[in-house]
Length: 177
Image (cartoon, rainbow, N blue to C red; front, side, top):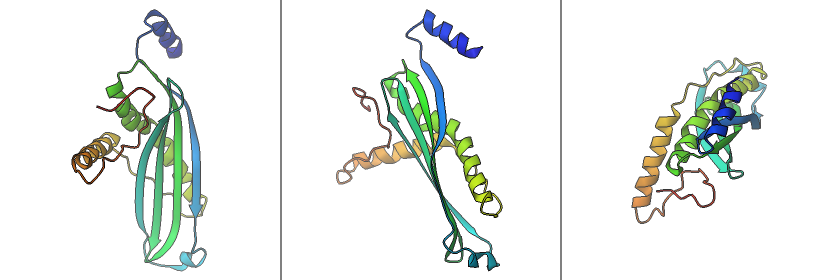
C-alpha cells in the first residue's frame, strides 16, 4: 500500500524527493581460521578487533550502491582465532534530493539500513565455525560520518595532505561544497 501511495505522490509531484531501497545483498564474505584446530585448545579468552568502512558509488542517474565492509579479527594471545571480512551492499533509488544531502544519505542513512543485515551475516558465519556467535555492537553512522568529514576537512586544510576523499562517489555534475 505504501508503494502505491509513493507512486501516487510522485505522479502528482514529479519533483518530490525519492529515496527507496531496491535490493540488499551480501557482496563478499571471507572467513579464515588459520590456527584451527590447535587454537581450540587454548584456555585464554579471545580479544576482538573490529574495523568498519563505508563506501558508495553512483550506478546510474538515480541509482546508487552503498556498501559497508567489516573486518573482525579475533586473537588468543598472538594467534588468530578467526578473521572474518564481509561486505554488505544495497541498491538505492535516490532522486530529486539536493546535492548537499546526498553525502549524508549515502554515508549515514544507507549504512544504517544495511548494518542489521551485515550483523546477522557475521554472526551466522561465525556460528558455522562451531564457535559462539559474535554480535557486533550498534554503530552510530552519523557520528562516524561527521568524524570522517571533520578529518577530511582538516586534511584538506593542511597543505601537505593533498585532501583526502570521503570515499563517496557523486554522480557526474555534482560537486562537494
